[in-house]
Image 1 (cartoon, rainbow, N blue to C red):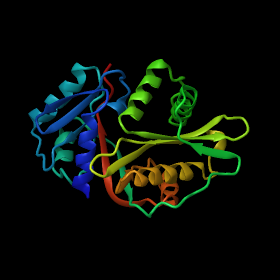
Image 2: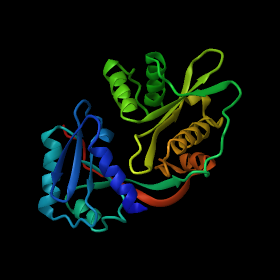
Image 3: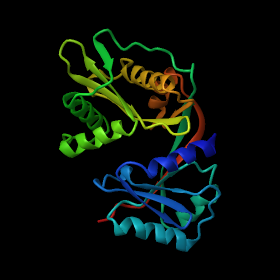
Image 4: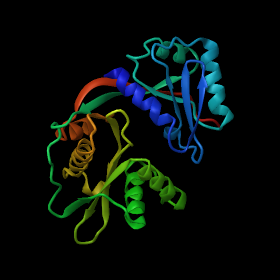
Length: 255
């Protein structure tokens, strides 16, 4: 399963608004529109044994594009990569449990009675959901036209979003997406809830809805990476179980 998921992650890099480059045993993807560090990253080839020159070349490829040198990968698929990257100046940004669910694993979790879940299509709903997600992950900026266009491209490519909003006011309070499925797999990401509405079961309901929507469309493996123990418990309620680990590494931001 680890190799299957890493193959999926590699295919995601080659889609959307990224330019890609094979740098030695690394496939690197560079977002064309944003320098946000989480949108550009590299993945080592299966069984990669990078040399010092390979790692230096990888850093140079990111720096040439004014992007933060980062990697996201399953160390079980490339066991020699971590030590080589550390020797070349990369530090561990995070070691995250990777959780998976299969058809039948995710219950139909209802949100609180005053909250509804929907699959957004209007510009207003997409912008409101994007704003909630940005705030939930510490970005106070208001999404603009470029962000809306990015979301439109994401949905057109086969991704799907779930928006949580108050029934009476229509105010957006939660958001999450799954990325366009490939070979029966998809990643759930960007699941966030407005601070005033947390600890009410909304995030678990969004996660379960995303998984069920994916399985209804033929997905056989859904996976995600919780950022902390609290998030892991949220996703466990939606039927996800820890299976392996994901390693994030980076160097300091390019000035």
